[in-house]
Length: 421
Image 1: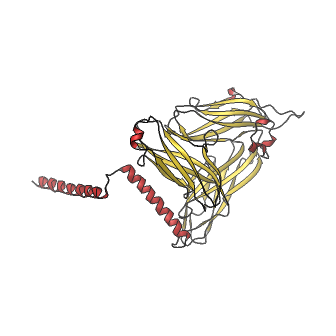
Image 2 (image 1 turned 60 degrees about the horizontal axis):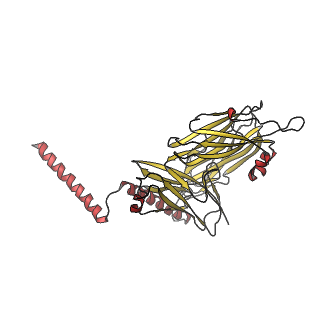
Image 3 (image 1 turned 60 degrees about the vertical axis):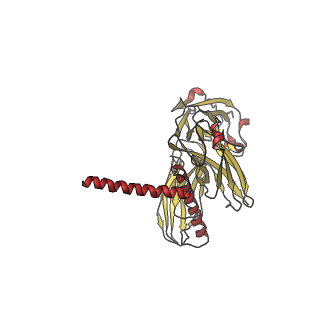
């Protein structure tokens, strides 16, 4: 009898709760949609963060304030040897605000870099240092790596510190770190690079750089391949010709790295090893990393698909601002792209404005290929700074979330631009 009464009471309570929820949803004029609520949550959170930053700048609230007199350190040109392939530098941080500042190590751009915060909580007026260490034993040529610190400063929630330099080695790859973003698992992509040799013999003739396909080793030859062909110094790019070390190269090999279709979805890393036939440096390594996003393709007039994988907007006037666009294309005929399935999850810097434009759902149903157009606005009055892709200065990026097949995937698009006067 008691069990019957308990079950009846429980049923009544459940019915009341469901009735209230149903009435509320009817009142606001829409049905419950988990994807839509997730989008609204992140948008409201982003608006709250922007409001907090504006209040902090206006002095309306007590808040910490990050001051970093230095965010990049140049080790300069170094001769590569066992004594100087590693190094470190201390970057100072001061809390010039009116509330305690908390700091946390977040991430780094390469396994060859590490960092440590001497003191992670600073009262107003206090200072600390971030020690950044790098190890370039396996690489050669130019290097530039970043570390990211998280803070509770509403105006500057992340700090980027960069170390860079250039090794003068018998053989180098330029660039020595290839980055792919938005790789489609069904599409071949490639990046080009140069292998450069230095030095001459006793008669002034260039030392040979006899690297060919038989001297290349790959971890995953099923999904990566390298093509090499002899080159001349006339193949040097303008940037290489203007580089104080690379311009002194005496021999050159042209290289192209290909990612072949079928690479599994998600992040990937690959190391390409070359036999150089130089006794003083018998091995050269080229690092490769990126992300496979499935059947999503990025395109646009400013999207540098083959070289850097970035949306390369270029110079922008702070007084005028700028606007650029790109497109996300989906080759899934059953997919419908709308606000509940495709959304901007985050942007960096946070004042970058990104909006998405969707085709009508009924129109999409008859289309074998769907797309979403994105508009990127750099507002007038933006702070003057250089924003680039991974490993450079302040990192610019757009992260788009896509809900498909009962799971969420991310498309990370690095953005490169420089804000001037």
